[in-house]
Length: 303
Image (cartoon, rainbow, N blue to C red):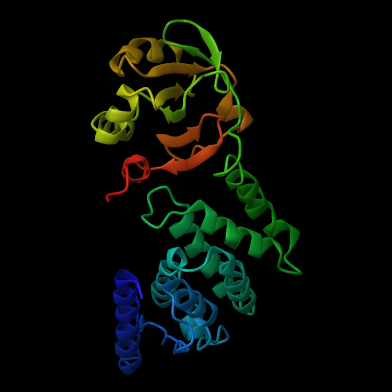
């Protein structure tokens, strides 16, 4: 069994045992984890089993626990922490069952969905994962009897998050580059293209831009002609862009949007900057990545 996953599962089990022993005193104790059948030997199989049975001991009719924000938050975080270790095809069913069970109490149901959105969709969450959030949105919208008024926002969020997913061709748009030439995304040749949506007035953008410029992997690939960078400004302040475009590296293509990307919602831009990595056909490899995630993806695996 994978050492990291073994340690993670052991910690969860010890925490659950401790929480069970102190249930009377501790209102945020963890749910006890189910015993994993010995026949399940791989880390992925074992994590998938835990996800499938994670909420077995939880009754959502027990409102002292199901409506307790601390209790539900701690257990949902434990639950979500298993997602990266499980088989991807095993994830939809447990998510659907969780929402079906939570739906017996409207307060608990809203709490579960709110916490899932906070941890999986908030740009500042360390657990943010759009693919995992899509699972919750799809399960929510598939629930029978969900009032139409409660479908509007998740339906919009699902439509938004499905745009430009990994494996799809990135939406094309026109831009004017820093030399005054009008170009398009799909017409920008590159073996791989780092597409960066940024705002020169954003202090966080400056930090990320510095990190990208200092990345050994990016520096090496750009110098070798294996990667190009397109930094696209979407906010429409031409004067600000003209005054700041020269501050970015000369080897980058710096452009200002001509296609009203924000207004037309061609891309989901929750918080600047937003980083995409595209292949030569402009197929999305990474969506809304971090510099660390980009570095890990581009760096060769150690032998």
